[in-house]
Image (spheres, helix red, strand yellow):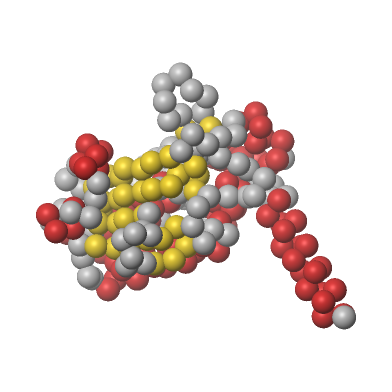
Amino acid sequence: MKNIYLLIFLVFISTSAVLAQKLAPKERLVFDQIAYHRIKVGEYEKITKWIVPIRYKIVGDSSKYIINEIDSIFSQLKRLTNLDIQKSDDNDEVNFMIALSTSPEALLNMTNNFAKYTNSYGGYFYRTNKKSEIYRMECLFAVEKYKSKSDARYAVRRGIIRSMGFFKQTNHAPSSIFYAEANHKLKFDAFDSAIISAFYSENIKPGMTKEEVDPLLQ
């Protein structure tokens, strides 16, 4: 019986932590800059994020270093967001496609609209529903065009975190992965992790405006 009470208590604490995510003033400043996105002209800027499970697939390059980097990023995001994130080779369930090459074979995995949103180095294309929930993402990272493995790892990390709904950047945190200028950040530190976790708190819903979110972060 004591074990049951302990389990209930731990579940309660875990849930409370998700629902009561607060941010420090500088974290809120950066959050406000990067968290809200206007999908159509004339709309309010809103939270746009994933709710459905993510099933990602990597095509176009088999280099171990970049595959490991992507797997590590998604592992960290799974912990920070509490989303169900898994790697998959089942094209019927994959909703997050990552191409690491501009080769025709790799690009065959992308939808027809994808080419409109990419250049020779990469890009991304996504779909949302009327609730501002992301349900499909396609990313291109032309790994072979980067000067070093470190540059490629940085580009992939920046691109994947953007694909989680952080479509904007900030000028106020030079050491953050969200910083507008390249800083070659290769990890999510405590600052970035706090923002990611807050963005994916259960009480912050897709479609919410800044006015609705502000009281939840203070």
